[in-house]
Each structure stands twice: as C-alpha cells, then as structure tokens.
Image (cartoon, rainbow, N blue to C red):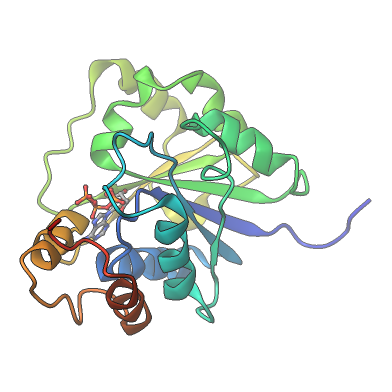
Length: 218
Ligand code: ATP
C-alpha cells in the first residue's frame, strides 16, 4: 500500500487558442489557493472545422507547453488532443484516475457558465465520483444556480475550499476577477497585424511570430 500523502491535482481545460495571461494568472492563483501539487492545463480537442485555420492542435499544445515550462506546479496534459474526437470530461477523469493513487484529490476547475450547463454533460452524475468541482465565479456575476442543480449543491457544496476533504465528491466556489483578456481578442489583434506583447508570455509571442500564426489570410 502506498503510504505517501495524497496529492492534490487541479484540472484546467480550455481551447487555449492561444493560451494567454488570463488563463495563466487564474491557474496560478488557484494553484496557490488550493495548494495544488500539480495543476494540469488540458488543451481540448477541436474538430478540424472548428479549429482556427492555419493553427494546428500541435501548435496550441506547443504554446501551452512554452507558457507552463518551468512554472511550478503547472504541467501540460495532452491526453484530450491525442484522441481523434472531443473528449467527454468523464472519460478524461476516468483516464486520469487510472494513473493516480486512490487517495489523490482531483479538483476540476470550471467557470460558472460551464457549471450551470453541467446537467447536459455526458454521465454528469458520475463526475463527482472522480473529482471535486471548483466553480470559478466572477465577483459581479449573477449566481443563482439552475433548478436542476439545487439539490446537488445542497448536498455537496462546501463553503470553505480549505474544508474540502477526500479524493472527490464536493463542490466549492471561488471568486476571481479575471484579467480582461481573451483568446478571441488576441486572434483579432494578430489578424490586424497588431501586437499582443504582454497579453501572452514572451515565449508564446515568439512562437506566434516565428510561425506566423493568426495572421489574416492573404
Ligand atoms: P475564446 O476567446 O477563444 O473563447 P478564451 O480566452 O475564453 O477563448 P478558453 O480556452 O476558451 O479561452 O478558456 C479556457 C478557460 O479559461 C475557460 O474556463 C475560461 O472561462 C477561462 N478563461 C478565459 N479567459 C480568462 C481570463 N481572462 N481570466 C480567467 N480565466 C479565463
């Protein structure tokens, strides 16, 4: 039996097209607040027709790897990109659970909007068997949960994130003011030939420039 203490692993998924300082600050703040041993950035697979033309999935991944390189405890997990179709979160969780010790704690980070859509997720009622859910809430957001989630919240929510125990099964909320940056804005600036310096890490900026990504098609 493994007597090591349980590890605390956070999961932060996104398209990361491209990764930017909004994602990275948010991830780092969560990692500090929750004292994660590891915070996995998980680039999502996107069907070819929905991916940004000229930017390959491997390039989105390369940028996330550059952004996270040497930044403890950020790590990159490419399991969803390695598949040939979009992954259900439940599949990703089951796959991860196969690699962790049973006592390890998994924290799935989701935005409030995504959380409200939870009942539409594949096998959503099983998610909490594998992970805790941390809902990222904007301080100014309307936070009335949908009817279908009221019972779940009543049964599973924990007011103090520090009071979450066990490998899975609880829900908590954290309030964060997001930096006013989006990947959409970055793609637009680049397509207009404008700079995105300081909106992405320098290593990501250099990669974008070296590969001529997100430029207007000629
Ligand atoms: P797009 O503009 O292409 O929709 P995006 O910038 O919102 O992209 P995603 O890859 O879709 O980035 O987001 C991944 C996760 O990061 C989501 O949970 C999203 O809510 C969160 N996120 C996006 N932008 C920020 C930000 N500025 N600060 C904190 N979190 C963010």
